Image (cartoon, rainbow, N blue to C red; front, side, top):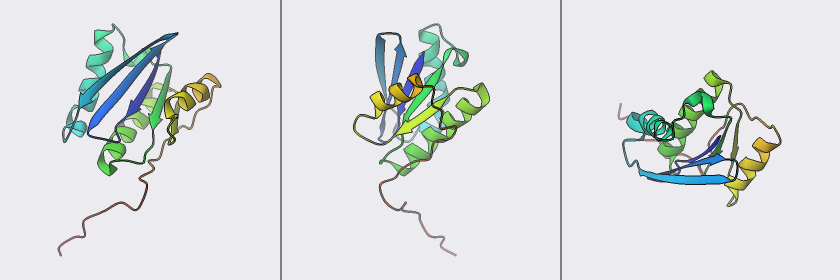
Length: 128
């Protein structure tokens, strides 16, 4: 099974692909992404009688989009891919899902995905 992940906006999309079957679930993460992402992912896997070990490839949308959403989502998925030895690929274009599927099908592995914010990150300067 392959999963595709997009956390570039407040509404996260997670797509499961098994053979010709494709199913997308959406989650209004808002400000709970860091706290609840692993629970959401694990719950969605459990609903399908799957575990992290059943994931054979991860495709992610690299951006542009939310600085925090991309940073959190990619950090968690990079860690999952590394610890479970799962190939991970990313893309930034409008056809990102198909590009990720094709790249995983060609046995590509970026090993680590860096976000594409679409501009400089707006970081608050320290007050002191």
